[in-house]
Amino acid sequence: MKVYSESDIGLVRNSNQDCCRTGAFSENAVWAVVCDGMGGANGGCVASSVAVDTIVEVITEGYHPDLNEEQLQKLLEDAVSRANHKVYEMAQNDFSLYGMGTTVVCAVARDDQVYIVHAGDSRAYLFADSEIRRVTTDHSIVQELVSAGQLTEDEARFHPNRNIITRALGVDPELDTDFNTVLMPEGAMLLICTDGLSGYFSDSELCDLIGAEDGEELVSKLIGAAKDSGGSDNITVAVIEN
Image (cartoon, rainbow, N blue to C red):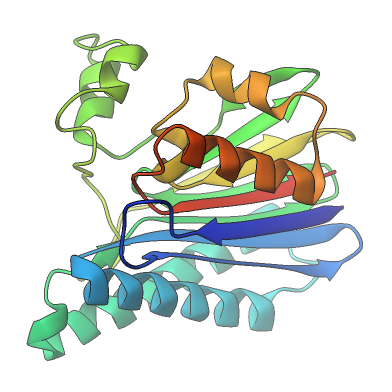
């Protein structure tokens, strides 16, 4: 099992408010954390970096190969909760950081399973057998409209409120996250990204972009494609391969 990641400032922004870290527990267990900060250049950068650092500290100290699914879920949720409290307290104690927050996708892949906790509109996709499936649901205004049948997925991509999210780490004292488990058979791939990538491409277009690429080449290709399409936001991509 392998994991790769890269973050790029894009072509328009003056700072990179995305943050990403990846690593391995063992040959058959790897992890990735992706955050997209908000709250001005300073606040966004602080929120995402503090969240990533806190989550990584908790999961790397708390992980054990004998953890069952329930215990692993608790570890991931506790890690995100601790990060939420830390970012929230910093924002309350520093006026220049008030209102900062970040999306989060935290994934641990072990054997043929991926365990994911997320909040916000950064996404995880499963690519297997030349097909792609979105495995997270955006916490956003436009996603609520899509779920209610008032917008199509294509309309949502271009909606003026597409960047308004309904959940973010660090904004409130408590954070409601989603947890899900995904089967990732041998040869499959998990793609995690911020909206600097997903905002430019439909699911089918992402599937076409992935094609036969993998590893570092795929990460670089996806970031390059987002920049070729405008690069108006920071772009972060992490790929876990089984």
